[in-house]
Image 1: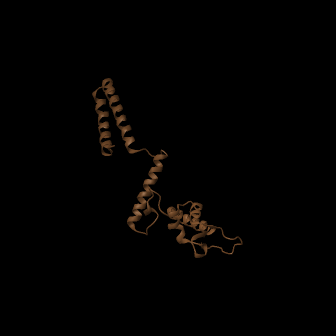
Image 2: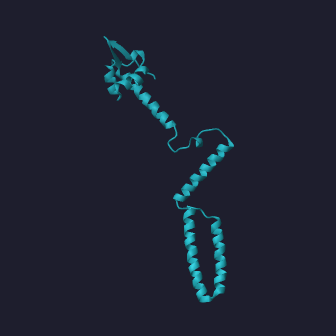
Image 3: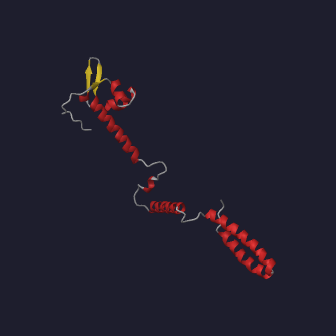
Length: 169
């Protein structure tokens, strides 16, 4: 840190307790964190008691907190995947990134209702099949067994196709 000691005002000297309160720390925190960072020109002895330059103390503490915030911001947020933003070129990493990108695209499509969840679609198709079977029964009653057999073979094919893509919820 660059501290400009060519200022015209004289420093404000405070006790360690006052400095700790000024920067919002307990005295033990101040002694452990801020005090070791203070340059020798910001410390003076008044009899047996130490005093610290308030301006330098506040500047150092602000810098320390700023560095802490930068460190926290540099870390990935919870739930954020560091493999998506770091690492060199590797085929496995590229496949992983592509898969994550595809999942994100699918999530956007689901949320914007451009895509229907497969489980929901399966439920709708099962209900539709039941409706068609009831209609088939009515066809048999009205037009005979031949109409029933034709439509039933189509519905059986439909059931096989649906069974092949079935998802268990």
